[in-house]
Image (tube, rainbow, N blue to C red; front, side):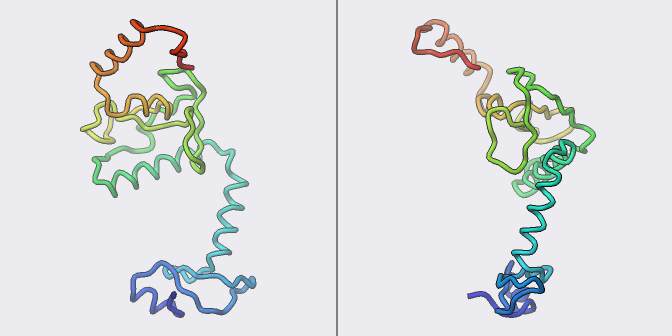
Length: 166
């Protein structure tokens, strides 16, 4: 059960509280402890803003960058990039597929993804490229030697069972 006052929620370090009283717009919804705003009103506002701006590619790129920075900091991964350090290609440099800069959905094979050229260095200047999610997933934590072994195996055992990558 949520506390009924913002003060109590903050004291307990909670995200939400519930007054039991509808907001100005009539929503019977929980409220955010940090702002006192109605959860339903905030959700409608965000959805409305997103639907108006979802075609703004520059905004999507900035959002991807902010998410990367936040995730890096929370996971303790080195990060010293500025937005201007990133080269934002229209196509994946590996598969030549058109990159999608979509931040609100589950990643697809052609979603833009940040690749650490040398993973141990983290997200630092000169070590980050944008490639497709698929390419980054295949590359993941593989070594060049491991990937070469896979290629050699596929070439040696080529048959109708192996379909070419798209």
